[in-house]
Length: 353
Image (cartoon, rainbow, N blue to C red):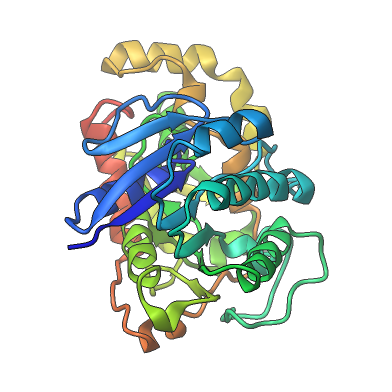
């Protein structure tokens, strides 16, 4: 059996590592991974390479050593702050260096996959037409996703490979080494509120508490990517990948409070990045009291990410019909998954019970 050879750029990130686990579990795949830093927990069966794609000369030399790649996956992002528009030039440069370097040596390259997200539709900026469909008109804002997709589309027309793109919404995942995680961040917020003797108030705005939103379980995303990159009917197009359900924070919030045996409070808008910057000492006390694995709050929570997520007073709904129509039928229950992951963080002493 001829095997597919995957090269995953950004393999130490949440999406890259989930994709590596999914592909390496399948007999038909051989998996290589690229990252700036070595993995904290290597995945069995994956061969790693340390590469900084900002360094063109270094990247070109390193990529030349991996010459049998058939499928290239880009799961990376340029370094960026929360709640700002990400730099299009920086993100395009990384993708350009990767594709150009791989093309030069991998003569059997068949497909390039780009991981995008709800930001393609401007979910981070303001209200957008819902349910968002893949062929909707682009939002009139600077958006690195547009530049990257246009780059792949044009380059593929000049080459012998096809492309695809996945668009998940906010990701649900268990990743103790990645603090940019809505589950662990809100869990840390709940633990701090409980230690202060307070109810679990919703720190976003009232509109976000009531609005309809969607999430994507990361294992579902990985399965969806694996599905589309070898399916001829999925070539040269993008696909929304969500859990297919929707929820409101006002329904999930009491369940989060219950996990910490505390009362659910009211809507009380806060800038967590400001308020929680003074809680490092309290978290240190919590970690000792409950024997947590880390006393560093910055390793558990990303407050700016939570602020950006919980300030969206508009609905976030991406249509899943295109995937379903072409045969991808995976789904998940977002509320139940969120609570399952929260309890997993508690059981593994990342968060207190």
